[in-house]
Image 1 (cartoon, rainbow, N blue to C red):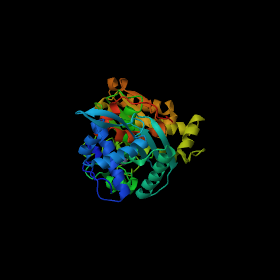
Image 2: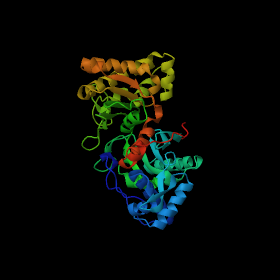
Image 3: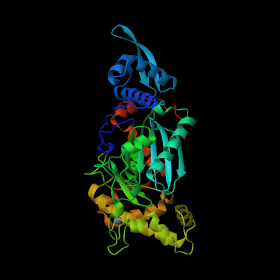
Image 4: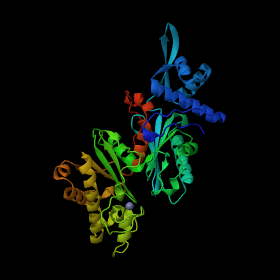
Length: 413
Ligand SMILES: [Zn+2]
C-alpha cells in the first residue's frame, strides 16, 4: 500500500497521504509523487525548498528531479535565491497526467489525460461479469499499456479517477448496499489504490458524467445542470450553483427509482413502477425481444430506430416521455439551465430527445420547462472516463497548476 486515505474524495477535501515502508520501487515511486504533488501545490520550487516541503533529503530530491527531468515530467532552470545559486524545478504541462477509468456494466475504458484537459491516449474493451478485483486488474493492465505506448512513466501520473455504475456511500467510501453493483460493495479506495498502485478517487458514473460536461464538454459555463445517464440503470448527476451536489451520504440523483406507474413492474429496488422499469435499456431490450424484429443489443435499438421500425420507435417514445416526466419533478425543484442526456442511446439524437422534452413540458411548471434546454451529450461514451480524469484534476492540489498557462502540445485523439 502506497497511500493512506484520510478523507474520501466525495467530501471534496484534500487527502493527506503518507508514504509507508515498502519495496524500493514503491518507495521511489511514492517519493516521486510527493515531489510532483508538492510542485503542483506550491508551484515552481528550488530543490532546497522541495526538500523542506517533502521532508526528503536534498540528495534524494536531487536524484528524483534528475529522473523526472529525463522523463520530461519536470523542467529545471538556474535561479539566484538569497544570493546563492539554486535550481528551480517546475512541472511541465504535458509531462504529468491524470487517468480516468470507467468501469461500466459492459465495458472498461481508460483515458490518459494531460493536466490541461487534452486526451493523450485511451482504450476501451468489452467486459463481462467479473468480480471487482479482476475488473481493476484489467484496468491496471490497460493503463500500463497506455503508459508504455505514450512513453510516459507511472510517476508522472498524479492520480486515477474511477467511476462505477452505482452510488457511493460517503460514510463507507464504498458502493452503497442494495445498489446495482453488489460486486463493488466493500471495495474501498485502499483496495483500488493497491490494485492500481496510484492515488485513486472513486465516484458514481452519472456524477462523473455531469463533471465531464462542465469541464471537458461544451457546458463549461453552466452553473445548474442535470446529466441523465440512460443505460442498464438510470441515474443523474446534479450540478447546483456550479458545484456537484453530494447530499447527506453521497447518494443523489437516483432518478431511476422515481415512481412512474404505481402498478407497474417490480423494480430491483423492491418498489414498483420505477422509471427504470419503463426506460432502462434493459427493459427496452426485454420489450423489443417480443417484437417481430427483436433487438438483442443497444446497437440493434439504434439500427432499428434508424430504419423506422414501429415497435422500436414506440418503445423509445414511451421511455423518453417517462424520463421527461421524472425530469420534470427534478426541474421543478432545482430549475436547471441544461439537461444533458448521456449513455449508450445518445446516438438516437432527436428521436429520444423529443419525447423527453414532451414529458418535461407536460409535467413541469411551464416557465421551468420553457427555460430548460435538453440536449444529447457530445462526449458520447467517453463522458464517464473523462469525468473520472477531471475528478483527479479537480483535487485542490491540482488547482494552481491546471489554471496556469499550459502548452497544448499534447496529442489529442
Ligand atoms: Zn426502483
